[in-house]
Length: 208
Image 1 (cartoon, rainbow, N blue to C red):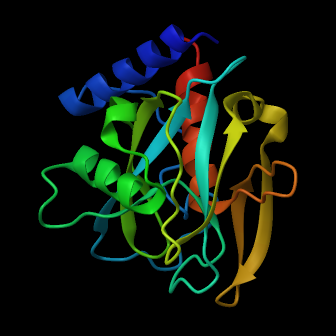
Image 2 (cartoon, helix red, strand yellow):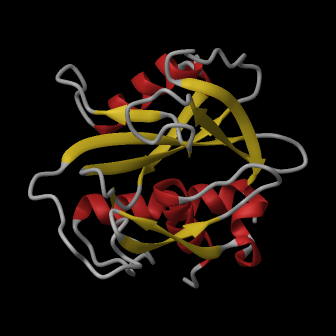
């Protein structure tokens, strides 16, 4: 898949979502999509992440972070750069760009924002807006040691190959919870991050 086709598909999805036009439903809307709903939060906290697609040769990569082990939530997990919306953020894009610069030192002048795609709700009460952006190489990652243990890249082709998608499970709060996982080598990519990548796979590979 070419970069132009990826940009076209994401831009069209973003435009239709913003305009309230009908769109095909993505596989996952939340952490609850693969499980019977026990109890969902009544109030959702807005958050945004950047889905950074880095222009590498011979193909695009996805920049990801590994959270530190002492984080109050999702410790040690693999995530997109991003976080909770703050009062000074004018929109979801502003949140994603600010958090990305704070967490990994990737500044806005390296990022071409393509647009927001389908929101994803987490079991911890966040309503996340993924912002897809094309990233120009030349930046030097600078991880915030309070939040980020590592910054790394995975070929986008890995996530576009459905053979690398699997459904795993574990017991959480006394119930079996099922979730998508897309391991890459020793990196165990799962949960909300894998869910948003599953949705991106749908946007980029669905017919039409």
